Length: 447
Ligand SMILES: [Zn+2]
Image (cartoon, rainbow, N blue to C red; front, side, top):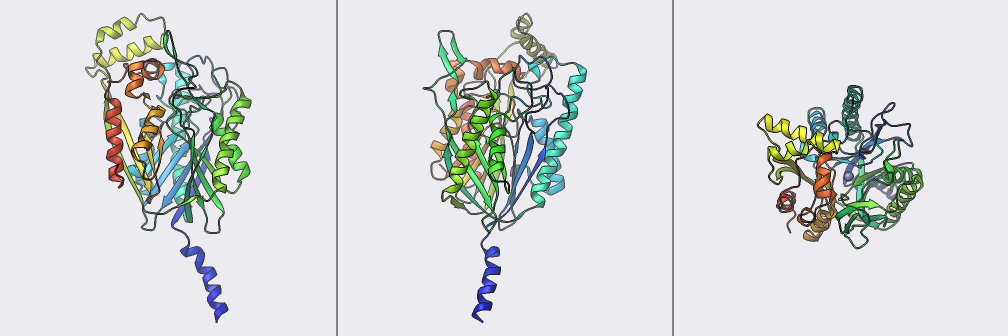
């Protein structure tokens, strides 16, 4: 009788031991054949071969009440809103997953393909190149939807746990010089070296997925590299999955807008940084991570961010610029003036996905500088907070008030390549922080 009782316990334990159902899926998104690569304006030809495959990976979680959320990571420069919204609409239709429960992050690899209109002003491409990018973007959209379906389709009992490690290769790149702030090295500048790790394990302890993040540009490989890869983030995921063949490793970029890997410009260094990150993740997995319980709660809100005022004359003058990208930007802005809709603002998505009372993922659009991640964590100290940039839309850089005042690439010049009119108004940081507080409140977190 006792034996029978024990036997039934053994059978029952796996069922009662799981707080969640977790699903994970990964699909290749490596372009077939040469394609124009994004990120560096000096590129003058399409890609030449592949270092390793690019991936779209999806992690689905379902709490005990059946509420689900999905986090997607991709080895891509950035997903523009047009692509994200197409994915979200299809996912809502096919899998009944609400928009606010879907988070789409892109690793910002600079050795990946261009994605639809993201950073289009950077290059002057011919019709054939544009057609290739359009085709790739459509296939990509379908593949990401499929990956999400795959993760939702293999939901099974699992537990989640969370922990934090550290990797030190990110450096602040806003260097002050007599000519102003340039992209260089600023060892005194702000960084965030934290490596947050969310682990999904089956009830028997087998690792199923690990979602890890880091606040650093994915730019070890510079403009002279023409082979497709996921840069350090790609190498980190490969190193992780080699050490854990049973699991899927997912990289999510955090607020690394003003952070660069250091040193850079060699493939060995991308492997080295990726290895350092994977080792940091491993170290966290070996510790006693804190258990993450349900429920899952989520919120997705959009706010407007205004640019500083400009006039038609500003862009008529800019038509004379020796910089071709500036001329392209000026033409776009003048066209908008002609159509009586000058570009005065962008729509900005802010999202929160909170898992139990343990960790909240805050997802911000654009190339968010590290100040936002640090400030948000400071203002919400009670639970773990992971602040991701490059999520749901990448429409331009997102500088802090201080960086807008200081100027430099993240505040001014980058706007050219994103086809935006110029620097943001000074209230951008206040508006974003207010929206972060709004979504945090909606998922039950107060200051
Ligand atoms: Zn960037």
